[in-house]
Amino acid sequence: MIFLTVGTLFPFDRLVEAVDNAVAKGFIKENVFAQIGKTDFEPKNLEYVEALDKDMFEEKVAKADYLISHAGIGSITTALERNKPLLVMPRMKRFKEHVNDHQVSTARKFEQLGHVLVAYSVEELPQKIKQLSTFTPKPRGSEAHRVVQRIAKFLDELSLSGKS
Amino acid sequence: MPKQRENLRICVTASAGGHLSQLLRIAESWEKYEVFYVSTLKSVTKKIGRLGRFYIIGECNRQHPFLAAIVLKNCIKIILKEKPDVIISTGAAPPCLLCLIGKLFGAKIIWIDSIANVERLSLSGRIIRPFADLILTQWVEIAGKYQNVRYEGAVI
Image (cartoon, rainbow over all chains, first blue to last red):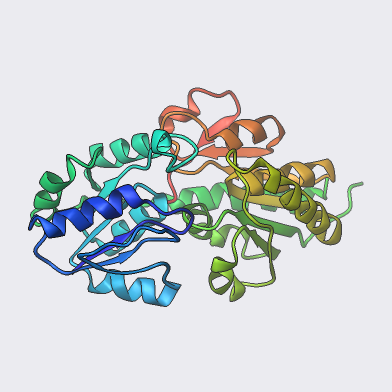
């Protein structure tokens, strides 16, 4: 099963439609379950819902063989934590999908690091979907503990020195 | 002599979605202190509700500036009521606004710029930078571009 998710904030019809078409044309043979956000667009070839609560979301992710999503950090983190192959397509300002194009550089960065596959356009999507089945995401070593230490130190010093 | 302050009151704030999930990955940082949470959408109620008391301030961004008035009102109410000593945030716009209001009332600001910004600080990060008491980026390349921005690593 492929789980397609567009994140919590806005719909992303360009991606959903592209995946819907990929199913219709036979580029995707697996079942697709999609979370598509609040939109008028109605996919014809895949099962979909507007939103999922956290538990349902986790269940879909766990069941999925591959993930497809926007290039949002929440989705990228989800995939990396569970070691699921993820294909992202960045939202773009010119299609009014986001306030700027930062998802393009996010996608490129995580692609360079070997963590995700990226389709930069609808045209690229079928070819990238094909690569998903052989793609092994590079795991990411977290440095969160270093950030935790730095912040804890700041708070310790502040609490010892008084408020200001 | 400054008053000894064992217990800081800390406001942990991030927009629903990736910003919030990044921030909650470093929850250990503030485990010793009294904490309350502020996010932007009701959809995260389940996620932060089990952590402690929380407020939802609403969303606003460059495309919906008029919503900023509602968010602003909510931010002022929270700051006046809670009077946090420290505000910790990963962004985006509404939490940035909360930081600015908090700063006006004497809170220290800790900003961890979202990992989604790989080329330069986020817009919110650039706005908060002159006011931040500790500001971290998650990409080493970005730290070199700004005087007071530090890199300790990425939370993801």
